[in-house]
Image 1 (cartoon, rainbow, N blue to C red):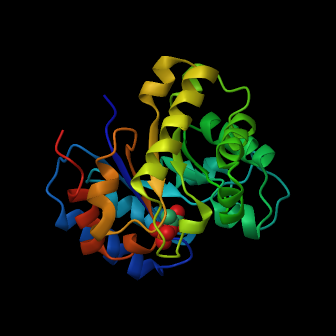
Image 2 (image 1 turned 90 degrees about the horizontal axis):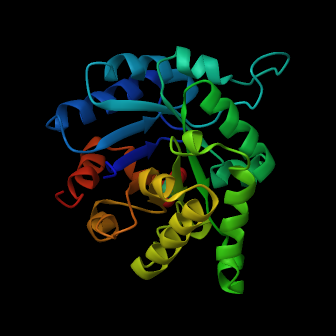
Length: 253
Ligand code: PEP
């Protein structure tokens, strides 16, 4: 049985005091233990502080990116071991904003996934099609390519550590949400990909999240879909009350 996961991607928001206030708000506002994994992804600068505040709670912490090399002459970059050292256990990899603004390719995603797993960080690997690809009708092929290159040569044991987030690019930060039919179709294909390329066990254990304008008003319907194991939330995760509402809208298990 997969434990649902709700992750908040704070993107380039939150100073250290704001981050502490937000994580404290989530911690205080939720009755623990809930039957859910909650993850917050602050900017690098508040990773350690948020990890410390979250330490005595069930909230886990994620970075939003990682460099693909172990260490060395990469000015301005952050290594997987530093993220682990700061107290985080997850890392978001291949977010569409990084693919779009920082030219991240599926090959680079694969390197980042490997270095993350080597350092015992759980990768939250983002995939998703652009509006153009959706309209052209080849979105399933686009997502399968992102998965086949991004997850290339992983063992079954390592693959079972992954979290996959399906985030249609046209639904991120736009207020446009994919329909439940569109979401379930892609999530089914992702699970079928995992079964075919790894194993049924991997397909049954990997959480597949939906992301794209999820908020309290639409989360209940999305989170009740059979192949949706949680959500990656951007804008609506910047407010503790709204984020908690989303967590509470998970169907009872
Ligand atoms: C995201 O950043 O991963 C995201 C889904 O953003 P939003 O919820 O704001 O669309």
